[in-house]
Image (tube, rainbow, N blue to C red; front, side, top):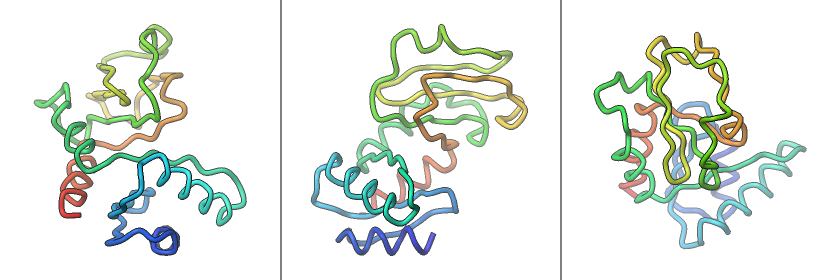
Length: 150
């Protein structure tokens, strides 16, 4: 995560902080989210030698995702938000396969999934989520908290 932090600092972002080793970084920037995304993807590709997709959310958007959790009574570690760059297609759930006891809900640019038996045991596959990145609600809450301090 030190490399990611360094890349963000070199890009001119302020108050850079990473969270757990899964590519979460919170920082302050006056640039538009589309510009931040393009800058990070370019720098990460140069660093990794291959394309690296980036999903960007503002502090307000992270808080909105946290508040939009359609499974508030479920254990936060068993509810995942799959962050996407754009709205999932309206028929995204029609193409999901391997669903057993999981519950799925679509949102603005996210897919929420409750995995009662745990994500690791699930056979669920959602093709619309392929280009996204998933974080459980504990991580979403922490990132929203960190972002609010920026």
